Length: 172
Image (cartoon, rainbow, N blue to C red):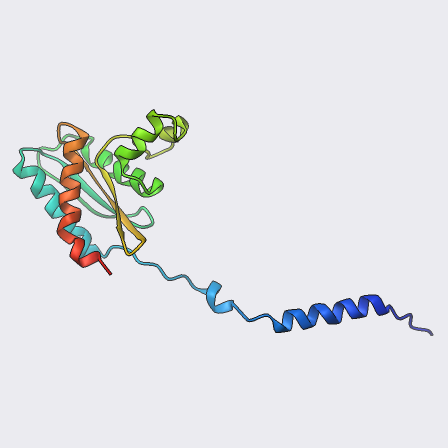
C-alpha cells in the first residue's frame, strides 16, 4: 500500500495552524457583555419629578421610564390623565430609545425626509414630542416618555425636568 504525499497541502495546513496558534485568544471579549442601565429607584425618582413638574404646571400626565432594552421600569399616571396617556408616554419613550433621538427630533427627521416616513408606522413608534433618551458616559441607559399635557413641548419639558433631577446620579 502506498501513501501519496501532498507537500503543498501539508505545508499550507502547517502554516494555517501556526498562524492560528499565534493569534491571541479573545474568548473573554465575546463570552460576556457588560452594559449599564438605569436602576429602578433612579427611574422612579425621574418619573416622580416629571409627574410633579407637570402637575405644578396644571397638567395631568402619564410618565413612563424604560430600561435600555425597552422594558417598562416605571409607569406613573396622574388621576385625571386621559385614557391614552399611559400608552402614548410608553410609545414616546420607545421611539426615543429605538432611534437614540428625542421623539420630537425623530418627528422632525421624518417630516423633512431625513428618515423614512415608513419608520413612523412601526409598532410602538410615535412621532410626537415628549420622549427623551437617558444617556450618561456615552451609554444609553433607557428612555422617558411623558404624555397628557396640551402639547408635546410641554410633555418634553416635564421629561427634561425629570432627567435633570437625576443627572448627578447618572454621570460617571
